Length: 405
Image (cartoon, rainbow, N blue to C red; front, side, top):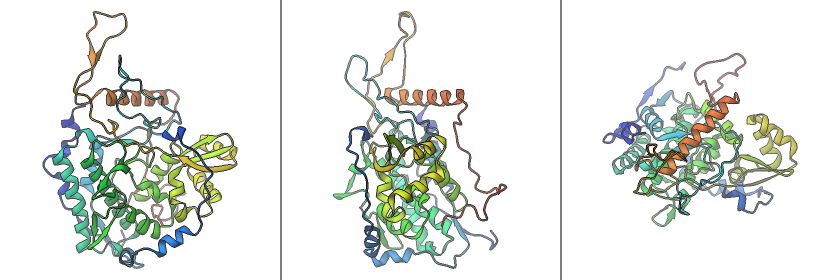
């Protein structure tokens, strides 16, 4: 897997090309060791938090009479397909921690038992020119708002813009700070990454958390929007290999919800208790005010058979699953600058086999584990991918099926 092939899209500053706006016709865990407490959400917090939102963020309130415009994210889509590796649909099997390097106690790469879920980013191959191009593209998205009123776009177009802007900015900052084990450790001018207002939209400084909570969660009532925000962590929703657009955002969020709800990083059983991701506790003031029944109703919408059975077998719910390790193929560390080699046992005259220094042992083994997982799923007749339709109406589909309220 040559870096030259993986990153062909990043010659000079390819991502810095303008995000075009065009008119449309009117018709167009470490969780195993962490304490798990039953979660009782503070019911009043959501209202209190929203009432405290700065007035200047009200400028992003969606209008009731949208204009028919769209934004082109083709370059971001191309980038995602070259730097993101999907680990395949969840098979609900824990992965044991990797063995240390032979003859040592050194453990390299991703250690999470969830590392074969979601997706991984190839941060190892993102050099300064590449990360600078992410910054240029993020600023380009910001500049779109200087000539186009985002709040006046159709709601799906607005949602796609906020999701893409958030994820571009998150990827940019992690790439600049890499190597780093946990994205939440990143500080910008002594302010945590999630709280730093380094994004400027229509002259308004906003943070990643502002985009999620004070703009999207505030104005979109469908909880599936939570699965569109990538936080750079293995334990969170995956980074999709497709850019969000007004046409596909509803379908992509459905795919992301299916992936997360049916994964071990989303739901597990602990005795008669349903254990869920801490993400659900975080967004509870916005979407699950009556936590237990609201969350279970939401999970039921996306639960496949194993999780559906889990929901019927459990009587209480707690939000204790957490995995903050970086969603990085190399686990947030550089590979060692020496080459490991090995030979089949008993075959002393066999040629030695190994992996390249640029790829590293840990990433090589993770990709091998991924291949074995997908092969095993195929032998069992399990699907190894998901298909979504964003522009085809199937029998039984509701009108405007891709609309996200």
